[in-house]
Image (cartoon, rainbow, N blue to C red; front, side, top):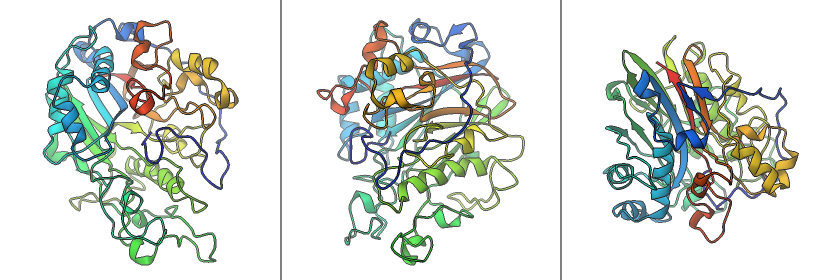
Length: 432
């Protein structure tokens, strides 16, 4: 998750109940594909992903490579001795994705952090794993920490992280980065950092509950500027052989840390909705990118929606149905959702809110506070229908696995509470 006011998601959205959307439980999926078992044992074997056998392994990882001060991540990655960065790199080296989105990776305009993570960590074997090299990399500005000039949280003052276009202590905190073994078509790449929330038809704009007017939390002046994306939305076309697969990358805001106006919950819903509309030619005409080009993905284009969406289909604090905008979309295939053995083991071991969840813990991707909301499925790799899949997984080893040291359980003695992150790397193999 995006670590905003807290290291972990520790409370329900103020003034609202925990949201659980109705739906049928997802069935058990096969976890063998391209000759590789999807569990941590296979990932640790050193075999490459399916990119070596005519396919491509797509992955997303909220790696918590964010820091409290501007330039701190570059400083940490300038050496080879940062323990957390080494653990993150080892997880990546064990799973060996071909196309990887990293959430919570601080952006710097010179691209130093992206380069240094490759040079000093991914290109060096970590913990006995083999190095991995990504010749193609992409990063771009994030709305986090960018001053809006408005009192967005209505506390009577202007300035600070809660009045930025996206919550952040400095511009680019909690940013994103893409690493790829396959060429990125930069000429066709699109970003949507500046798309305004009000320009989405029927947007769930926050409402001041103390006034009779609808959708009036933001002043008219603020609403003219407020951006939809809390970080950015990216369409990154990746060329895999003769095919192009569009990596649709984002990291919607957590649906908490607000009040009865539910500005973060509503924004989370609409940030997720953006991709549902973007891949739907019949409703994407309102969309424009940062260069002014209008419209969404062309009909028939292949895509993978990836990222920490901060929304579980059945449990947690997001608006009911938010995640289903994608998991239930007619052009999206969620039939082979990645699973792990570590998720159910964590539920049994940790108890608490996990024991009351409606969702199957095999699909959990994040280890959140056990009191509330518990572990959730919030990280997704969702292919378009028609793309052939060959299994996938969530890197969540059971405690008996030697690689459990890379995920662990929450430990307040560790920076951020975990050896790597409170999220798990999620991957899916495509036959391209």
